[in-house]
Image 1 (tube, rainbow, N blue to C red):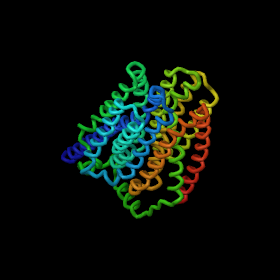
Image 2 (image 1 turned 90 degrees about the vertical axis):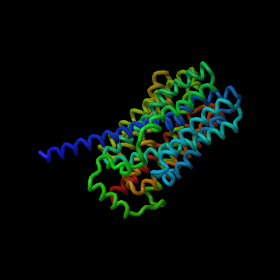
Image 3 (image 1 turned 60 degrees about the vertical axis):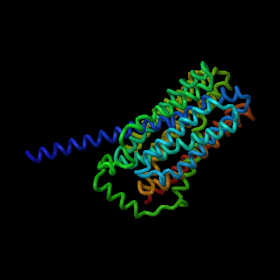
Length: 416
């Protein structure tokens, strides 16, 4: 009887702990919605209206997003060193407020230098609760079902983009882009409110809770990983670094969908709906890749998503009817699944949890920097050629290189 009561209490404790893990996932979903869904995926709706209103090139205005992405990428490299148990919550809160306030302030300025400065501040703030920070928390809280947990959190970046892009477009059309920036800044903070009020830490062990699915053999695996060497010049790391650069560069294209639709003679509402369809594809693909990765492995799941995305590139290049533009935009959203989930899981598979904090921030930095450059590059390509087709052709070429590099990494991993 006593043994049964003891087992009952243990099972009850495990259930409570499991609930805590998924509550943390829910909180991280809000942070992803803010740092990715709004700060990255929704900024494109401002490019055309602000540039046209101020009489400047779209490439020049979109440079503020390039600066934001670049600053965020640089700051993210230092996140693992700065984010400790004692500094975790203060760093989180400070970054959220900085991102929200700097975005609100954009509604009061008309000069390009001011937008560049505020973009830099937004990027600095969002880095403290962006991709690197989110994946660090997930790595600590989950040993099993890590793919599912990661895909759920990252899918909210797409969900927020799908909801907020048309919302912000409607605000801009009815009240102007200045009001739009004020609403955007408020939304950045609102999505993060659960993180302000819910009690959680960087590692569950500091709260007396074991990571989800942790077993004795898991601990033994970590000790074994600690003994393995890691080199920044190793072929697997260099290959993944290049994949991160090439693939993440493509993720800037959806921010130009509103302008792309207008270049095809479609109204602004079609471009906004394309961006929303893309974000829906973002959500679906992230959920799909997490489940596929848990079953087949991160490498195969990522390669599958890249092939599907190549189909979308072909569609947007050659088919321009409204319905098929929406379908192509939906499939284009699959690009985010690899950059946001696939690379995270592949990095953990190749280098283990112990070396993840050394490898992934650099891969993330390189990818974010390439996306930052790509945002303005695509704008300038349109300014000087009058078409977005060149950017889509480059995306197709990048994908072929990605598949070749992933095949090399997979072969090396199998030989170990």
